[in-house]
Length: 378
Image (cartoon, rainbow, N blue to C red; front, side):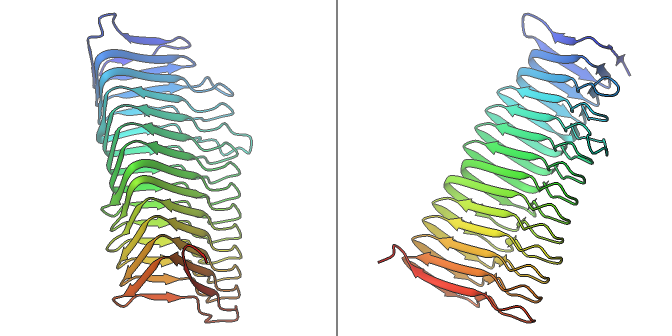
């Protein structure tokens, strides 16, 4: 295996004619420097690229790949923060980007210190992004803030991929943002939860069409005293959630998270679930807002229950037409907290096929409220 270990200096690979760059079965490492790839195509396979900060308080390196086509296959790019310095900045800029076959990009903060460094950033800009069988790590263990992942492309496709941006300390969890014309996820696990005092992270998707299926999961839960995060999903044409789940649950004293879905046509399909319940502890359940022209839910579950001292969730659906078939909306209480608030506002509301809307009390807490409103108000 070729090994390149430049120290305290930058590394630049490429040439003025922007030819092809192929790196296989190699180690490229810099401490306190930078690594740049610039070519017509950049192909990295079975290779570790590491850009670390100098020992102690040094920030991580910048690793930048610029080409017409970038491919990572069974490759690792690592730029973790291990002390007081921040993690690396990893930048991808191309027309077509493919990341997969067990590839990992890691800019997490490994320091458990209360004043530990922030995790780094990953930025991906392209026309077409295809990520399959890959892992992105942006989590934080101590006081450092979680990292950020930004993807800005025309078409964004993810499958069999994990994105971890949790916090296990005082620092806030990370931020995940994707913007394009089409976003399609299948079997994707995205987690920006908090298991300590730091607040949960944010997950923001914005596109013309968003499709999430194949067992995908989006999570920004609160497991301790930190509040849950935000999940904001916005489409200008259509949003589809099928055989997938969105979670902003509470299992401690922190407040539940916020889930917001906005699109003209919203479909919650077979085996889809949105869960903002207060499962245990004293924290209130989260807030869910779904707004569009049409909202169609078929064999879907929307849960905002409370099982502890916290109150149930606020769940609001607003559209011209709302159709529920075989769907459960539940903001009941099974603990000391009060049941939640459920409001459906539309010109037409259709509920059939064994659907149920519940805000009951099964314990000492008061039951909640359910409202059906005609829109617009007169």
